[in-house]
Image 1 (cartoon, one colour):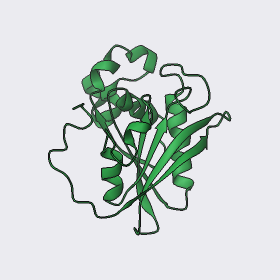
Image 2 (cartoon, one colour):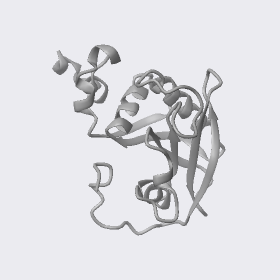
Image 3 (cartoon, one colour):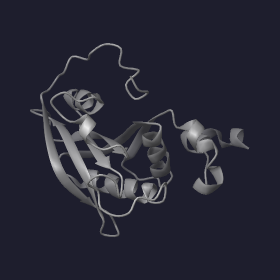
Image 4 (spheres, one colour):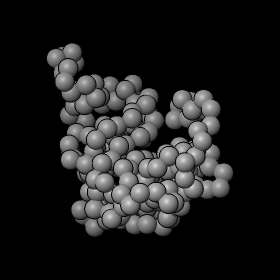
Length: 183
């Protein structure tokens, strides 16, 4: 059991069947395309709020029929569109992987793509643990209008040593109304 799955204590009863779109290519501002899957509830309302999961570990673990990371299926079965994307330069995504270098802008561009989809309410939350949490914090710094919330798990310790490199601390992003605490 990993930190991204530890809070799920009992199965949630699905409200919808889930439809998975694979092989999507989401263009970034510099022309690089990132490999993306979209999970949507079948028979749900026309417009959906969305959850974005950007991963450096690949999309395959989230996929049907028996995912080892069931969170995408769980959220989609409850009525959300779930977008799972491989980071730049990893697995099927284009470009060159450089740790933390493109995460903020790529996350922002992906939020724009989600907001522009015909199924989108233009309300997007982000989700992830550890490295997936760090990508959320980096994206949050750019204040995309569609980005409504972030569920960041287990990322604080990893970020504390990179404060200067990131230009902002984890606590400053997550607790922006209490920045005086960070010193």
